[in-house]
Length: 418
Image 1 (cartoon, rainbow, N blue to C red):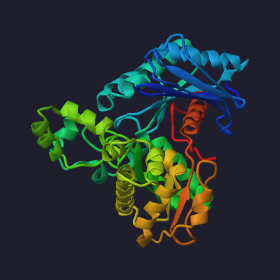
Image 2 (image 1 turned 180 degrees about the vertical axis):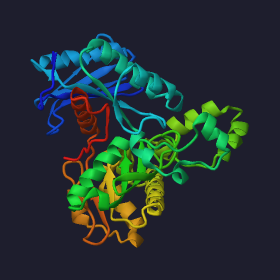
Image 3 (image 1 turned 30 degrees about the horizontal axis):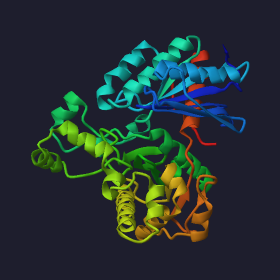
């Protein structure tokens, strides 16, 4: 494997989660991928790696299931691609705190700063750091770039990100709304502007990334001005296993009732709540939607969980119009946002007062395979836009590496739309 600076060189995008690693080798200009894959259950004997190349899918068990071992297995697949010359490696980093407002080339100072924010994302930043360390060790001559989930939301005004708590909590402990999933919100906003034929700088958008983790963002003139996730990814919308918003007094109340502590309760709110907690059946929207088509108690419970999900999302969308002043378009993305026709339909039904009227044929036609309008023509539109976070990572990485090679910059905020 070699390195270099050619315009057509691919980038390796890595997303190291708490128990998984997503990876892709792709052309940052065209978005065409040469290799994509996912390693699940990292660090356990049950780890498995699925990769796809040239239309062929392969599943295997890495010999070493640690993060360094998984990275070695991924790099082995890169060797199979032949004389591959990587332009750089881009890493998703969940939390950048207030310091990182853009993607940056990784050096020892940047690594130290990322470690310094790990207390804000204890499940994610340490895993991100393990992936970075392994990649730097194995590819010492290839530039490494950090792309932060929180960076896009650092344009929020102070009145949007401050909580009504003692100011010392913010000054001394960094307690504020940071927002997450910024790479996805940024990408789909730019793609939506292309689809609408209007400059992003002239649009007022609400973007809704809906998957196992869910968030919504208000994007005004291309900048995030408010978002649903907060200090942690637990705040905001109902998610697969996360509760989203709730009365903080519940923690004290349930600690007394269950004779437990805040750590146990936080774990419950993160892993046993959301759709799973509401239904007692599943955290998967597809499963609940299918169950809800039947009869009986299980079907009714499944429908109830989906109804709560859609209602809470619609409430948040309406609230996020406040910082926008008007709504030009609502954009659905993420696994649920791209695949669930019924969820989109239900949310639009709640939001008819904003001028959003579902076009049933268009809603059924668009989704993961194609972006497009799903409402009847009007001043306010709703769109489905498939996200592509790996392409955001690849393009920021390419932009930074080329800028550094010409001595112009070490950080970037490159546009990411196709």
